[in-house]
Amino acid sequence: MGKFLSDFKEFAMKGNVVDMAVGVIVGGAFGKIVSSLVNDIIMPVITVCTGGDGFANLKYVIKPAQEAVGDVAAMEEVAINYGMFIQNIVDFLIIAFSIFVALRVIMKFKKAEKEAEEAPAPAPEPSKEEVLLTQIRDILEKK
Image (tube, rainbow, N blue to C red; front, side, top):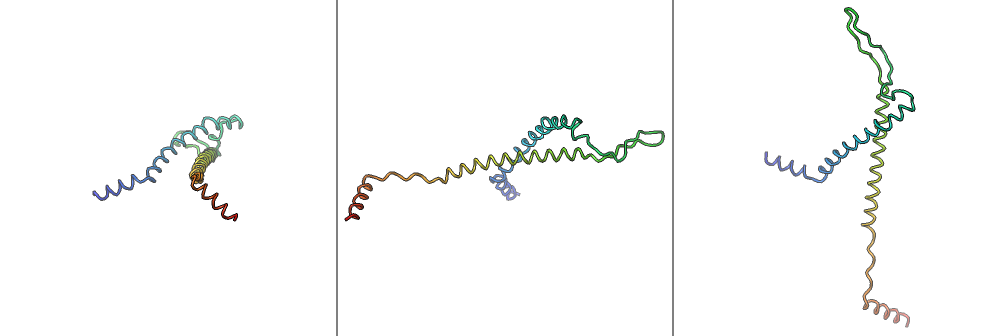
């Protein structure tokens, strides 16, 4: 059991696992922000533009609901809720676009950071001895 716990501790403390855990937590919070963007900002505008209830109540009724009458039990409405499907597609597209933009910004920062690291260091100034030796060499080459 001790070997199992030490192996698990080693696995859990690796950088990739910790990075993944942070990513999941940040992703969850990011998902809430984007859902709020969709539900609280974008969908009301779409609702006004479509002049209705938005996508949530769009449906095709196959069999309407029936109330209980005598011995016959009540039946719920049978419908295809395509409005919720459209709503989920809109949510997905906005979330995917938001993640794309966020990753693009992060990649630009990483690229700039990498280019700064790879930039060659300026050559050091030659010493007085090197300058004199270079001048002597040039004079000797002329002769």
